[in-house]
Length: 330
Image (cartoon, rainbow, N blue to C red; front, side):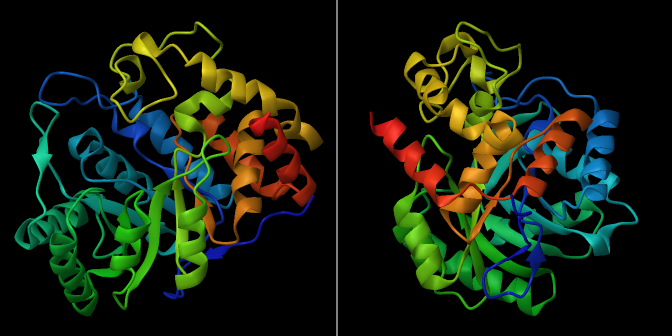
């Protein structure tokens, strides 16, 4: 086993730990306009702060959030946890979604350049910093015309010293490639895990020298081993009322039998060599591409310690990747 080394965000020169931490879950409960949950359930802010600081002690330097997570709450908690440690970390956040903080409700998209500037100003304030290291467009289906204007405004933000680099959070390689034409575009954030590969996106990252920031690296918790068949989620958890894109869970937070069976098929390979299931899933991503930076979520010190523990094990071996491919095709 070889400990995984740091990664660089594209051509930006920004070095990050090979594992980042995603801060969606620590935003707490929030909802869409119909009252459906968009968070991961109730959180303990003190535990969240402790988990972030523990992650720092364990070598995690990359933290990914969004202004809409908890309608501003995730950014505030992250900013609080990083007080006095700003120079030790790389902060990524996202914009494009409007929200009402008083009702903790997502109110819709806004792809205007004027809103991008307002959103950036607000994120800087909530995070307690004077710059964002990686600023990411959070509208995966924005048009290329909208993206062209937003890419230009991101270049303005770089020139003003408000951000260091930018990216698009999208699962469409064409959109990612379009944004990557910008001088300071350093990454693409996209869904990927051992159950759901993204070969076109990895090819694009290799071709353009982009970092591949991997959301859902643990399939929204399915790859942690905590969800047994028939297990149910909790109130306020998006997995209990899953939107159409969340395919790993059914109503009530019950894991999809098809996807649960796939987890069982690869469990032994992923948990070999002393890894937990989650650590094996992260190791698969590191082995899949030299550009990957998975960003699993967390809500406790214990989860932070387990995820960070994957770094010491390093990537899976090539033979293990081949074995997993065969098992998932079978």
